[in-house]
Length: 370
Image 1 (cartoon, rainbow, N blue to C red):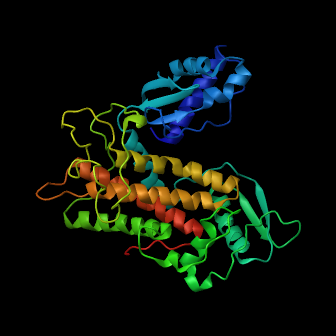
Image 2 (cartoon, rainbow, N blue to C red):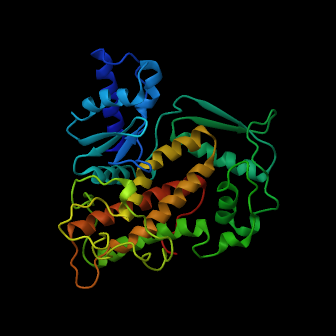
Image 3 (tube, rainbow, N blue to C red):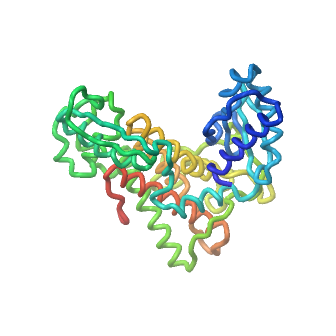
C-alpha cells in the first residue's frame, strides 16, 4: 500500500463513520499521512482525528478510536495505534516498503506530482533582481508539478521578493550559483562563496549530487555482479518498530564508511541482534523510506508556499539518508546477491530518481559520475 492509497483508506474510514452516524463532521477533501514523528509507531501517522475533533465536538483521542476500528478492517493494514493527543499510527501489512519503491520507480522524475493547484494561475510579480528571477523561474516548474500554472512578470506591487544576494553568484558556475540562491529560505540572505564548490561533506550541494552519483554507481556495480533491482520488503518481518526505540546512525564518516556503531554492514541489522530477532527496518532503511514517502508533501509545500528552499532542504535529507544506507546495498566478500540485495538496490534507485527529479526542478544537473 502506497501513501496515496493509505490516505484514501483513511478518508474512507471517515466517510463510513459519518455514514453510520458515529461522527458528525464534513469529510475533508484530503488527508495527509506521513512517517511517524518522535514517540510514534508503525509505518505512517495521520492527525486527521485532531483536525476533526472540533467539528465532532469530541476529544481527539475519542475520534481517533472511532476511526481506528474502520481503518483496521482494511486488508492492507496490519495494526492501528492511537498515540499522544490523538494521532493515528498505522502499521501496514507486508510489502509496504516495496509498494512505495514501486511507485517511485514507476513515476520516476514525476514522482510526487499532484493536482492540489489544478486549474490555478499563480501570478509571480518580481523585482529586477537575480535571485528573485531565479526563484520565480524555479517556481514555474514546481507549481506545474501540482497542476498549476505560474506566470512571471515584472510589475508592482511585487509579491515575490527574496532577500537579494550580496554579490553576483555567476562566478560560482550555473549549478552552484542556483543552489546558493535557492537553498536558503527567501527571508535569509544567501551566502555567495567558494564553499558551494567544495567536494566535501560540509557542502550540502555536493552531498546531494554525490548521493545521486552513488545510486548510479551502485546500479553499475550490481550489474557487474550479475543482478538487477527488484522492489521488495526490506524488512525481515512485518513487525512494526516504534521510531522512538530506533537509534539513528551517526553522521560521521557518511561518505567514506559506515558511521560507528550503526549496525552490521553485512545484514544491516542493529549490533547485537540475532538473525531470528523480529526487527523492523534498520535505521538507515527507515530514514530513506521516510524521505521518499515525505517527498510529495515537500513538493506540495514548495508549490503552495512559493518556497523552493523546502524542496532543496528535502533533497539534502534524502541524500543524507541514501549515504547512510548505501553500504548495505551490495554483497560483501563471499556473500551472494540475494532478494534483500535486489530490494535494497531498488530502494537506492528510487532515491536516485527522487534526487534527479528534484535537482531538475531546481534547474541543477544530476551527475552520473562524481
